Structure formats: C-alpha cells, structure tokens
Amino acid sequence: MSATPMALTAGVRSILLPLLLPVLLAACSQLPQQGAQAPDPSLAADDMTAPPVMPTIVAADGEVLPPVLDGQSFEAWLGSVRDAARRHGIAEATLATLFDDLTLSPAIVALDRNQPEVRASYAAYMEKRFTPTKVARGLSARNEVEEHLSAAETAYGVPAPVLVAIWGMETNYGSYTGRTPVVRALASLAYDGRRSALFRRELWAVMRIVDQQRASPADLRGSWAGAFGQTQFMPTSFLRYAVDGDGDGRVDLWRSAADIFASTANLLATNGWEPGLRWGFEVRLPDGFDREAVRATERPAKCVPALSRHSSWLAAGVWQQLGVTAVNGGTTWPAPETELTLVEPDGPDGPAYLTSRNYRVLLDYNCSNFYALSVALLAEALDVPPQPDAPNPEDAAQPPVVTP
Ligand SMILES: [Ca+2]
Image 1 (cartoon, rainbow, N blue to C red):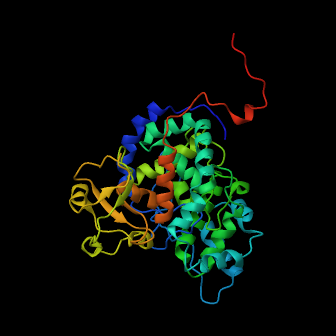
Image 2: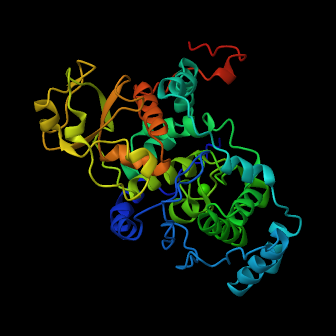
Image 3: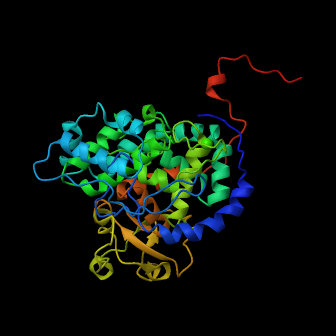
C-alpha cells in the first residue's frame, strides 16, 4: 500500500460530495455486484454516470458490443467486437493490446456454468471466512491505513470498519487480488450465452478503461468474473465510482490506499449508505413466531436470490411488539420507525438477523446474504478505536528507539 499524502483534502471532498451525490443518486439505481462471485443477471448495469473526480467519456448505451450470432465462432465474434469498438473510437493500439492474442477460456465458462447447486451452510461459510485470524489481521491492517480510512469516512459517511471489512472479505486485506486475466474472463463470459449481455457491458467498460490509459493491461488481473483491485471492482463500477483519493491524477485500485477506500466508500455512499444507521443485529424470535405473517409478498426487483430470503419491511417498534429481542443484551434498538427486514440465512434453526437499508447497500456490493453478513459482522469485530502507536510488525527487527 502506498502512503501518498492526500492532495485532495477530506475537507474539500466533504464540500464536493453533497454537490455530487444528488446527481449520482439520480443516475445510479442499480449496479453489478463486486467480488469473486459472479454478478447477478437480474442487476441491469445501466451505465450512464461518469465518475465524479476523473471525467471520462461514458457511452449511455450499454449495448455497444454486438451479441454472438448463432453458430458464430469466438474469433469471428471477437472480430465484430473489434469493429464495433473501432466505430466507437477505441484506438487500434488498444484493440491490438487487448485482443491480438486472446483466446476463449473454456475453464472460465465452466466455472460460471457449474456453480454448486447445494451451497455450504451459513454456519460453515462463516466458520471459514470469519476467523480469529481474519479479525486479528484486520485490526493490524486497519492501523496501517487509518489516515485513508478516516479521510474516506469523513468524505463519504461510510464507517472505516465497514471499508476494512469489505477489503478483508474481498482480497484478505489486499493480499490476494486474483490472477485471472480480466479481459479474457469477460470476453469468454460475454461469448458464452448464459449471461452475455451483462458481460458485454463489462467488456466494453474495460476496453474504455484501457483505452483511456486508466489501468495498465498488466494490472487487469482479478477474479474469474472480471473483478479487480483490492476491493474487487467490476469495470462498470470502476467507471462509475472510482475516485482519485490521493490526488495524483490517477485512480489506482491496486496500490493506493487513498484511492481504494475513497472509491469503495463512494460506491457505498452513492448507493444509499446512510451515515449513522447500523446494518442490523442478531435477534431471537419468540417461540411459535409466525413467519408466514411477515413474509414478503412482492418479488424483489433485483438481487433476487438473496432478497427473496428476507421478510417484509416492518418498523423496529413492530418487531418489538411481535416479541423479537436482541441476542446481545447491550444492543440499542434503532428508532421505532426504522424499517427492518428479518433474514435467517440457515432457515428457522439457525441465527436470525434484523437488517436495515444499509444492509441492502452491502448486498449491492455483492448479492449474497452470507457475504453481507460476513462483512457486517467483521466490521463490528473491527470497530475498535484505532491504535496509532501500535508497533508495526515490519519494524520488529529494528532495535527499539530509546527515548531519553
Ligand atoms: Ca490516485
């Protein structure tokens, strides 16, 4: 992680943000999820917003690249992709860099097609992902980037522990950002029929990123679904939300902590993160609780697999009247009118949580209850005052400084 000084101060950005937010909120209603898991096809990537700091040309039409014709080979389709990109002003050199040696990856297509039908339980997922090691490492990692987290929190209103938790869950605090070539992954998934339109939009986005020299082709490695950088942005999210936190004129989601946390916070804030609102909390349901009475009646508009497991929205005061109590006796319930939904990720026999609108913003990052809960609970575990004087493990071999 670089420790570049913040050229654009938090104060300046906190003035700029309120001016930009209404525009962004109006323009962005949906986004593809981040992370190693593939985007949900129900999340239309309506791509129309330029990032707030670095102006760029963003086509309003998400369907720039041609669909695959019946029986068309990968090579022939790639030729039509190059033609379309040329017509839209992508430089010949960019096309050569991206596509001259590109081949279809059957392995990536197979990964997308063969996602396990029977998933691990929430309990098993958490046991693997939310470990004491991950918490300990998060506390240490947080200290190293505290100034950038504080700047992002001040500018965007997203708590530092939430940003660290996303960083921890996505790439184990930047230690593993993925090795799959992003362009090859996106082209292969766009060629495959299953979710072609979504990945064509992502492929077009990554072509513009490279053409605008906003990322080097060498950096474009990531998850098999095409997410990259320390908090695993999809290309369309890079174009929409990535910001230059350290003011060096570039967005670097691989090496600049300031850029990484400003961009991640900007994504969450733009998607409606409400400062001061807790994500939710674990609850206990009374014996004989009537789940059918609180069942949601409308199909979710997006993120269907995760949201269809949630109850209808009820006010906190109503949940209390129904006999729901917080598992942790120290929990302060939100204001009685705060709307919350109930989710039981392992069903009635497992833990239960009431969740707020901010939980939905975590689902925007990655449409999975397991993921959102793991981020929320890790963020709580990391929500301790920073320790600016904590020794840096890398300094351990140095002789101690003796203060007279
Ligand atoms: Ca930068």
